Image 1 (spheres, rainbow, N blue to C red):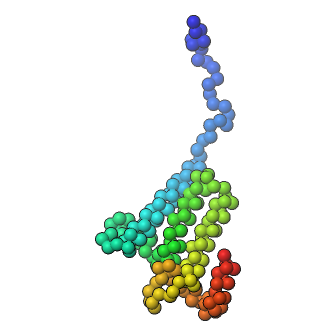
Image 2: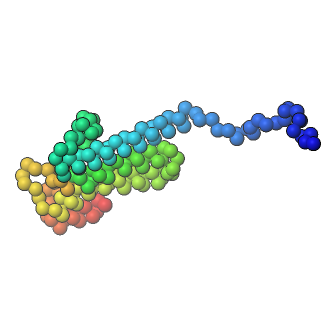
Image 3: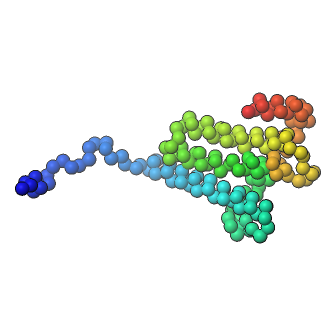
Length: 171
């Protein structure tokens, strides 16, 4: 028979020391903040998508889809930095969430954060220099108020070519 089936249960089935890692309050906080950042990135991306659909087609109510919070996040962001840079902004909290989940190293996270922040700041300026200026009093959909303002200053200070040199040096 199987005499080993009826052996005493008094054996060392416990975990080795250090085999089970306890989730401390620090690790739990990091994961909760990571989840919150990831959900914020998804919500911001959704708000921008609904705002884009509403601007292309009538009959879509942004406030009905994402509420007043989504409306007041997406609309001023697009007015400030334009559509291309606004489309990059959900990547900033998403990348940081990946670091908090342990999917990115600290140095890699920092590099991506600087890259996306730099793109959000410089892309509107480069687009304002590249596309035709909108009518006075109208924000550029490509460059936003930020891009038009800074490009206007740099063009008046350095000329058209000099403004492009400043953008290249800033990049």
